[in-house]
Length: 95
Image 1 (cartoon, rainbow, N blue to C red):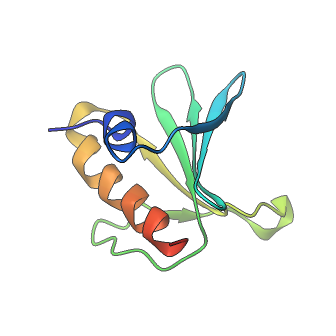
Image 2: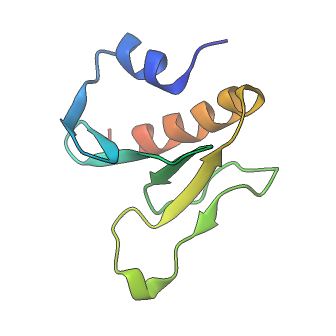
């Protein structure tokens, strides 16, 4: 099993710029923002339709006016593979 950060490193994608509370990943555009919370990672993704059979991806309310308006939480190691596949979908959307 590979964590999201290790997967992104293996594809030679580096963080756009480290932030105080989150890291944004981009190629030509941002495709993921990983926000560090106390007990979980909150991951913002691009606004596409995801292959999400477990219905974990949430749409962020339009009032926030964010480009990355989809969100998923990584709460345990058991979530890593599923969430990594969602990050990969977001990445492939910008290629």
